[in-house]
Amino acid sequence: MLFDYEMLRLVCWGVLGLFVVGFVLSSGIEIGVSMLLPFLHASEAQRAELVARLAPTSAGNQVWLLATIGVLFAGWPTVYAATFASFQPLLLLTVLSLFVRPLGWYCRASVTREDWLKKWDKALFISGLLPAALLGVMAGNLLKGVPFHLASDMHIAFLGSFSGLFSPFASLVGATCVALLTVHGAIYLQTHTQDALYQRSKALAMSGGLAFLVLFALAGGWITHLEGYHVTTDIMPSGVSNPLTKFVKRGDGLWLDNYEHEPALWALPALAFVCGIAALVLSRLDRAYWALLASAVMVVMVILTMGVSLFPFLAPSNISLNSSLTIWDASASLTTLSALLCLTGVMLPLMAIATRGLYKILP
Image 1 (cartoon, one colour):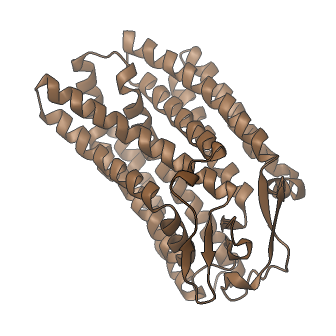
Image 2 (image 1 turned 135 degrees about the vertical axis):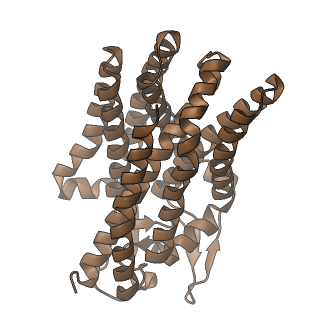
């Protein structure tokens, strides 16, 4: 066998991260453009051109979401169950809004009545804002800790409330995610528009980028004082999957543990800032293509910062600390992970090539 159980868990965790990156990069453009529709002041002809460009990519981008959910379900079924039980209302709203967007693009291209066009524009705006905000809120809750309890028979109980998921910190992360995808979508528009719409996209990219840098800095400063989680017992990377065999402590600043042990990891949030600033400068200098590349790297660095900060946790519990789920004690079996790695080893490059090719061939 190519990998032992420990390495297989780690590699599959990396594969899960790659699918998350693929989903955010591909759907992030659509989400960003959808949120910007009311602020572009574009003519109907310009809006129709944007719809014609994005509609063919929309349905295909949802495959990244389905694949990400599938990898989580196959690789870490307990994490899948705990997160879906805890975030059920948020996930329902997110998934519904994500799948409304392809319908919105196609329906908007099919109607001619002005009142219906306005209604679909509003629907597209909501289908962009909701996923961006709610995905950020869920990410914030993972850092803050999710109020679930894992019983001895592995029964999962969510002990929180819907309103409790919108804590100040989680809301800040949600706003940061909205700003991140807004600037990503605005710079994409800058690469495919001209004249007044180009200048408007450029201005929106600057506003969204500055908002992201400020919010990202605030979230980073908050995390230094936010209660993090740490496994106090010996970790058995090759052990049997049983989340209840460990002890977890909680304390201020513990999410910075990985950075203290591996200082090179500070490059990830630093690159997020550097690439964010570079994207704004390049956008200002009318180097839209390079600005889009910098924006894409910025998005990737933000996702990697989130993953590295949480490692090895996937779903920490703030009510029953020892119920927290890590990549080591909540994974599927060796056989399942091996099959998952083989399947995703084929799927991932094919999906990446197909997505890149689809965006490239569009006019």
